[in-house]
Length: 288
Image (cartoon, rainbow, N blue to C red; front, top):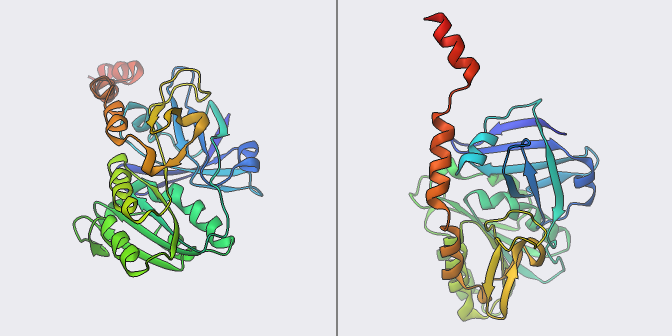
């Protein structure tokens, strides 16, 4: 059992949990993920590790409530425990002293980009971070990103905080103003955001890495649910990733696959929201 030691409500749909998982924390590295099973009847949910504390034996998870499983996860509280956590999984980020680098985080993707920026900074890189969200309320970890960045640019779609821009606008400005100086770029966020980051950086021939969060079941490469089409053939996010060359991803195929089970997910979410515990129902009927 993996006990929840801390919970923060970052927004109406975004939750942070610090979980006791000493073996995972011991081996976790930037860029890796875990698979969470809430209970025996639960769904296996892949989540990128937002942070880890080897001394305390904890990992930090940040997630948005976008479907039945993550909504249910959001109802868990301090003292509750996950049934299983498997990980760390996937290949860690390749950290070197590249020179000037850019880390782009969109929405909840800011969380997993944080340990990457931190390790790049510790390796001696000049780290430029661009973080963005739809509104100020959905922006997270600005102070933490500032602490591990040499330069930080903040954007919101509606202009409620920072610049009123998409993250690709300052990204292009930097690439234009510093020709040949940016050696590598990492981008994590919604798939559509990563697609446009890839389109922005490709003309400049700057290596760009994205972390893909696809449909995933077993996390071992056996089910094929996380298949992603690349220029050089199909890959599996769980064992070949989660990081890939953004310029080689078939983004249209990826976006299409992400929508495969949307109607089923919506139906499951509605059933969960409509469900009433039999005990609660009996108590309510007894009161009447």
